[in-house]
Each structure stands twice: as structure tokens, then as C-alpha cells.
Length: 472
Image 1 (cartoon, helix red, strand yellow):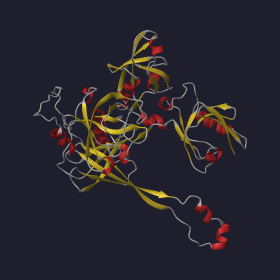
Image 2 (cartoon, rainbow, N blue to C red; image 1 turned 120 degrees about the vertical axis):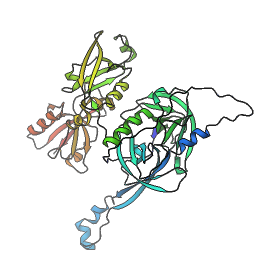
Image 3 (cartoon, rainbow, N blue to C red; image 1 turned 180 degrees about the vertical axis):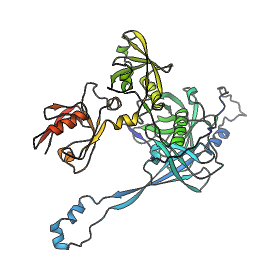
């Protein structure tokens, strides 16, 4: 049976400036094994009951316009109007409301709440209900970050019970954890488990991943809720489960509290996240590749984008990045998360291995969003209705593309446009126009402009198979 990833429902942006004085749990503690006797009951009630007060229910509603399909075209047909009159009422679009439930965690006494981006994405109304209360508060979105699936919302209420943050970097596999949330809308619930694994990436949920894996039951509605340790301190925000049939199979994922704290502070201060970018595609070393390098860990440079910071700093395909700002790099995901946590313009010192020798270089991070927007285009001419982007290292990595594949990727096709009628699909790779091969948007534009024929043959790569589409 096919695997599916179950998540709940977030978004938008509203600039707001503030600082949060995060309440940190005491790091001076020790782990102990429980002692049993006939006069002892092992219980976490006191610690978990405090954390429970910080977890809220989030209800969202979204207005969806439902078109009448092709029936509008039928009623609008002149032949139909001839029989029924030209003033015959044509069915209009209907609006219906979709509702969903999720959870959130209070991080400040004055109403800031962290949750998953997917919980509140595209919501027209967000309602928060506090623990042990029926009173509802309307919330506004302060900022959201789809790349990490984190969002901050705020309600106008003082004196709230804020969660205490644990340092997620010192978590260990086997630590007892509790998932607190509002699954299926039945009210606040607590489930117990252990930390099954740490630093999980390549799950396919978010662009930036560093998940805590747990077997504590996380069900629909738990998204955005708290994962706490046995003291009731926050170690993560519950995000998703991996499931074959929609039920809980003991594989749940939470965003680490340290990442949550960093993203939350930036969203509250700036209302958005700006990420650094160096312009490389990277991967982990395979077992076969390890014999070529002296270092067995690092981020292997697979490709370098021309004109971006890595290229300007002299990095090349085959370089193994082993340090960034004196921090050891053990994997490609570790480097990606580090760079993504830094602002554009930040200086980054890189140590890498090339040809068995260690070398160093320094670069200045570019702005990820501006780098991507500069490599995209939409068309209103022969390819009207088509939007494309140049193939960046991140896109190659996301779709597991052949590093040698050249072209531009289709990001959007407008319905009933020329491009739509020609058969273009999202994620097609345009590789050739007529007899001109395409490597970037500039070459695509030039080939279209130079085409003098009434009809134009455009070649695309679709799921690894070349196809020729005719533009009339």
C-alpha cells in the first residue's frame, strides 16, 4: 500500500515588531531510572499538567468558491438563449466554508502562539481556544515560514501560561516525551512515547528538515501541538506522521525547539524569513565516494551556479565542504540548515577538501528569494499562460534531476491559455525550441523571438522522456 504523509491545515504575513523573552527550562538536571515499590506510583501528572496549560486548540475557516463547471458555458450558449430568453439566469459561483482543527503552543504571556504553517495556511479566520476554557479568541497571523512549516499567530490576551523551552540539541534517543494536542477535535489529550531518532531529514515534508522522530501518538489535530520532555519543557512542535492508511503507526515527526525558537523570533521581529544562499547543489558522500576523500563526512558539491557566491569564491564540483564558520559539517543537510539560518550578506568561511588537500575560502551569502526571482519569467506571447524558472541547485535536488540536464522548468500553466492548449504541464523541462537547445531563460526568450514560423515545435523533458509540443 502506498505511503502517505498526514498533516493538518497555515499562512500569510503581517509585519509586526517585538521581542520575546523565551522562558528556558533549567539545563542543570540528570537522567534517572525509575524506582519501583508497592507504595510508589510512577506519574508525570504534575509536570505535564503545567505544559498542558500552554497548548491551545486552533480552529480555522476558509471560504472556497465552487464553480458550476461547464454548466456556465452551456447556459451561455446562444442556441440555448434563443429558446429560454437572453435574460435567463445563469448559475453563479457558490461560496462554501471549509473548517479544520489544529493545535498551537503559547510562547509568551501576551498572546504569541507558535503552530504549524499548514494549520493556518490560507485561513480566512483563525479562532483560538485556551486549555480548560470555552472562550474563543480571534487570532491574527504575525508571520509564517512554509520552508520550515512554522507560523506565529497572536491573540489579544494577557497573563497566559507560556511554555518553557528545552535545549533540543541535548536530546537523546530513548528520552521519554509526551505529545500534547487536540486530535480529532475531542479536546486536549496527552500521549507518551520516546525519542526514536534525531536529526531526521529527507522526509519530504519541508525544505528545511531536522526532525525529532517519536513513537508518541500524533494524530490529525495534533499538528502544531507540543512535544515535551518528562519535565514538561518543550523539545519540539508536532508536525506530521508517516502512515500507510491514515492511522498512527508510531512514526511521528516534530520540529526541534531550537529551530522553533530561532524562526519564531525572526517572524515576530521581521514578519518574514530572509535566508542566505550560496548557489550550489550538494549531497552526502556515498560509500564508494568515501574512498576518494580523506574526510568521510561533509557536503559534496555536485554543481555550482554561475555568478553566485560559491562560484565567485572558487568552489567547484567535487569539492567536499567539511567546515563552515569553523563548525564541522557532517552532512549536506547540516550545511543546508546552517546556511538557511543565516541572513543574506553574512560572511561565511568555508573549509573544503579538493584533490586530497584542504583549502579555505570566504563568501558573502546572497538572498535566496531574490536569487530565485531573478531566474523566473512568465509569458504573454507565443507561450502565453506559461511561467518558468531556471533550474537551480535546490530544484535539481528537490526533483532528483540529472546534474547534466539543461533547460528551464515550467512552474505554472494558465488554464485555457495557448500553453495549456499545447499540452504544457507543471514540472516540464523545456530543453529545446525548434533546433535551438535551451539552457536558461535568456536562451529561451531569444529562441522564441527568432522563430519566424507560424508554428513552433518546443521540446520538453517529462518524467525523463522527451516530448515535442506544437505552439500555433
